[in-house]
Structures are given as structure tokens and as C-alpha cells.
Length: 143
Image (cartoon, rainbow, N blue to C red; front, side):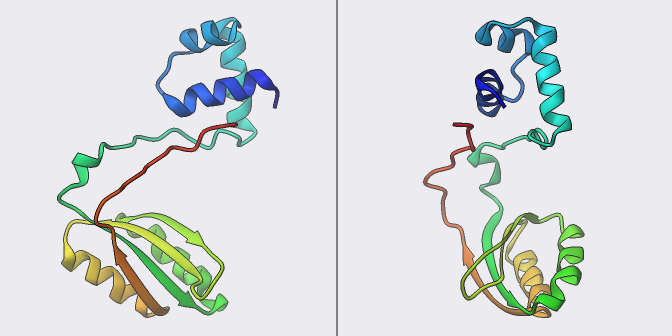
């Protein structure tokens, strides 16, 4: 990855809908050259995908939480299969410390959150923190 690739990634991380033509003008390349670089970075897995980030106001009616779970390594595959089936799960982190995983969820209401917690407790001990507000949300940028 060279300096121009980093510039392209930085621009896309700020606005994934930026046109190739606009990117090309900012990095002083032709549109086909930028398209080729983006395609190569996608094929290499450097760009894993594009996503939609909802404004904080759009999730005000939802219950957002972090569920920490301690479980035996032998349960990992079954747990990951369950996570794939749960649309309320947005992220799952494998972490160090007393917990094995931290799962970020966005539920319609407290009943759905309680239902998820009960499912997770079949795998081990849980600890849940409800997110009251987001003080800082910074998308990852390329250095």
C-alpha cells in the first residue's frame, strides 16, 4: 500500500459514497486508475465492505447495550452460530480479561434485551451494560 492508496482509503473512510471522479481529482489520478486501485484493495481484503451509519437520533427508541460473556472455549462455535442468527447483534469482540466476549446489541425494547441475555446465559455468565448515550463515535480512519 502506497501513499495514494492511503489517501484513497482516507477519503472513502470519510465518505464511502464519494465518486471515483472526485477521489481521482483529489489524488491527482485518472478515474480508471482510482477504480483499479479500489478494486485491488477490495480483492486483497483491505477494503472489507461499505456500510451505512445511522444518525444517533434514528436509534433513540432502541435499547443499546454491551453484553459481556465468560464461557469455555469449547462453546465458541455454537455461540458464533447463535450470533449469526440474531439481527440485534451488531458487533462481537473476543477480548482479554475476565470475559471471553463482548457483544454489542441494539434491541427494540427491554424484553428483547432480556431474551438475548437469557440466550447468552446458556453459554456462561453474563454482565450487561445499557448504553445511555454515545459521547464520541469516530469512524476508523487510515493513518
